[in-house]
Length: 334
Image 1 (tube, rainbow, N blue to C red):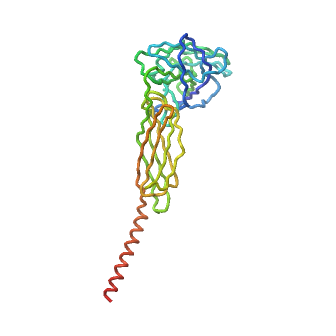
Image 2 (cartoon, one colour; image 1 turned 180 degrees about the horizontal axis):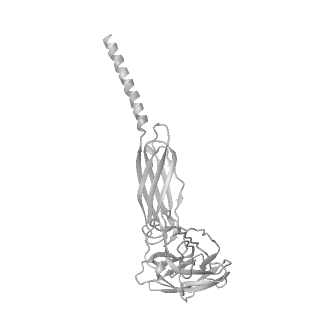
Image 3 (cartoon, rainbow, N blue to C red; image 1 turned 30 degrees about the horizontal axis):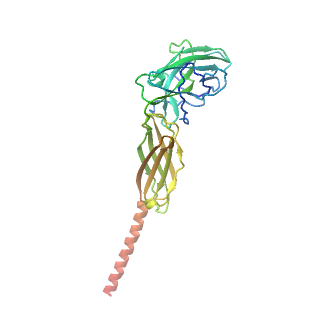
């Protein structure tokens, strides 16, 4: 079995709901956690432009970037998605909805097609799940989003995906060797209490202490940032490093965290060169999401004592003391 190549592109379109319901929209944050087993969907598929998925528009002109709804529990909402074959050959596509996740580096990704969605992806019912399109044609597919009565308030994120089928006779409808899929993001906010919250875990620092007390070393700071609330966040991380009494303070460039989905995490590593060994280093980390009034502060310290240099200086001091004692004894004897 060849390597699996997954790709997802988040496309654009105009807002034309198929239902009489008119939910309020919420603005999507900038793009962007969880297990190593979930592959990141690349934003540049191997056959980019060969087919597309976008929210339906009656005039064919873009207007919506994504499917974005604010709904109540128990609501059934209707809309349409357009799949277009922009290639010169007939192609068959499997169409389905799934849940979104973040990879460890924060990239926006989707569950594997063989993994059953448990969140918003499971709320979507499509008119059909497989289509064959002639070259340069498109199909508009109605779908509905049925919000469970027990759905948790806050943000639920997924996508409606079209996946090219290499062999339409395959009972599973999906090829095994090369998998190319394109998706339009689906953002659903369930009305109710929101709890924007972040947590910093596994906060560590290592420092390559130089032998020379006047030399410099490399400091590496690592931490895991988790969205512990129920709304998606795009926080900013501010990190600074300083020696004892604030000596030699250095500021890392602010890091704009990609969109972090509820319950997901991102692993971050920062490296600072030419850090002087001011006996003890302190790293101060501030994570803020001003739009949601979220602020988290964490501090960690690391000893930075150049022991070899200190030992040499100590030996010199001891040698001078011994020499002084010997001189005094000689004077006393004389």
